[in-house]
Length: 265
Image (tube, rainbow, N blue to C red; front, side):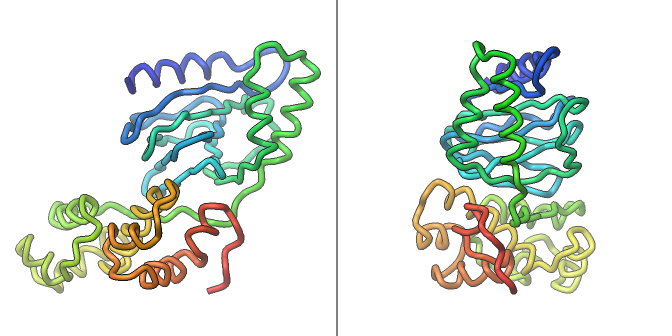
């Protein structure tokens, strides 16, 4: 299934218009839990889904994309794309030679009704040249960076620390203390503390918070209740989860997913 999707993406990307316009639109179905292996494109990409929830990973950075947001990926950026819920990946591929947008980093953008309609409009194959050019110009005008940043969860290199990280990634609600995890891998609390900071740049507690918040985002984007999500990722109460989210990200989960302004913290 994934191999077929990857072949379809390659075919669509190679079909970027050579006469008028800079955008070609491709649609690729993804089932829940499926991930396309790491890859890059020769063209810029705007990844979006009309339904379901996409996730895109670039190194340790991770974006959750409900239908209200998309991700700009510059040409050449290696990334993985997956679906945490059945989704239809809608990709806009833009010729970097003729595209006027020159963002050099992956950038989240908001998607409103007008942009969604224009994406569907540009997927048509019967557009006259002048109509296509006008629609593309409006699409580029509608792309505005969102203030929210991805939640980074750096993966440790040391095998002992990676074992702890993998355990927590498999079960974010694991409530064992640093001491408990240190015992499970046969090292002291002090050693595990030092190794976590060395490998990830984060303390154990901060890394676990980032991991839990990142695990929560796809669930929230699917519309699950905050109380259920908080329990699933290891928080005793919704208020504790919301406080951790605001403290770490600077805004509420709803504002984060909708791309609204980050609050002062």
